[in-house]
Image 1 (cartoon, rainbow, N blue to C red):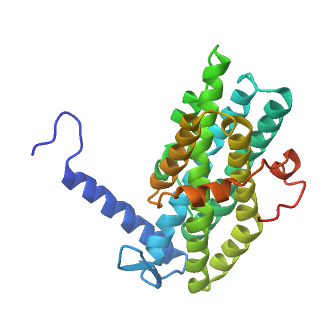
Image 2: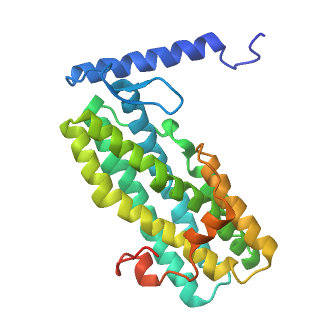
Image 3: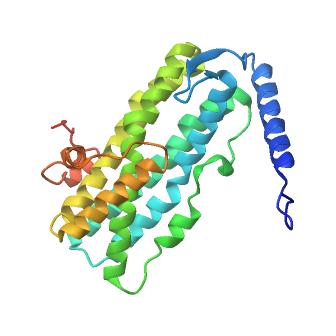
Length: 271
């Protein structure tokens, strides 16, 4: 099949990918790291070496950073969704804080490790969800508060699915690889994930719960089903398994988190 217009051929795409990987290997070697050193096994089979781990960290950094723009937009959308003032103010503060934390995860945690391994900053095109601009544009408020509320609930569901998957699978997997690597960069990354990223990501999941109990739970069963479908859509977007109804209901809990819990001012105990 011939390439049409300006679309790149398969050969050029493969050549570009090989060139990028070769440059990455060169950066690792320059840093005194063996790109072929194995630190784990991929779930799909095969080994994960340092070169592959470098690519994973770059993608994680860019994906976390991509959460900054849409969560910033969510904070402002909450103020124009016709919500009770206490709920609107709580979501504004919580999403505004999350926006800063997502940027910190991307820039200060994973990008730092990526830079230390290869001396290059991860580019936005490594993100698994794009650079966040499309989502932020979707969240621009309309003149209809009901439509703004619908967008807020829809995106909160998808975002919650992504965050639950990150907490349950992505971060534990990264920590396991770092522990098998047993290198100063890996040990520092384990500490950062344990002390900074996971606690903050846990609060982001609380926002998902808060939106459900404040905006969704009182509604018709069809609205609740749509929220659950959106949550699972976020998980499956990253290859995670969909949550069954029982597990999802257990994770959502029977009551709303408090504003102080969302902002990290009160400790959260698992139910």
